[in-house]
Image (cartoon, rainbow, N blue to C red; front, side, top):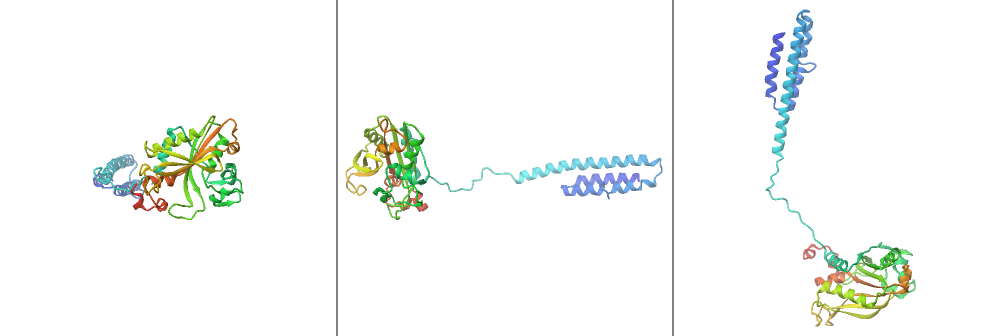
Length: 339
């Protein structure tokens, strides 16, 4: 029996040293140390020994078991290290290999010009304000001095959700919301999407963008409006740009005006872009109507203000010499990749 135990120790040492992976090592552990393993089989024969031989043989069996367990543990560590090394070699990344190129997007022409406009007005101390696109009739029309029977509603035919709820036709409702929640001085622009029931063609779309401006403070005059818009035009189109104000009518401003800029294509000499006039209309504005100030909770006897609004698509089309508004919405990459 002693010789059998020594043979088991020698054989196990040799086989464990030759094991190449954890499954092989586990099979050897079961073979020598398991419930039906070789050492267990030897121990079952202890009953055949005399009382004097059993202690010595039991001690030897425990030594052999302990020796095999130690060999298995050491071999397991080596195999684990080897597997880790092999995995690292397999997963090695060659950082010199060129990466897979992915197409990178860029700003849409609407975003390019909008960001420029924001930067210009930021430089003049304006803040950005926003409001809901689904708007109440009160904010979109009535608070802006456009009652339900006013003819100006005909030019702003829109999409109604209920009798008193609609998709806003302009960003002007933001003016009222700001005045209701902020005491003067107020100096904001409100860019955003607006909606009108227009047929789609080269210059019209049922969805487009407006940029509304509002300044309210003590002593604000038309001279402030002209200076603000002249600064804006020069920053956007160049220092040689001139502006002119023409009388007009808007229900929410009094007096009101249309603002033209000298044609940036011909310098005011006359060309196809300006239709030979030398001027291009870019926006409308005027002094905020006293009734609109009252509707916003501001005393028109103490404060005055000016407001203006411009179409972003119009600015973009002039800026990049685009003759069809639909190109801005069709997502044709052949067109968009030019910007």
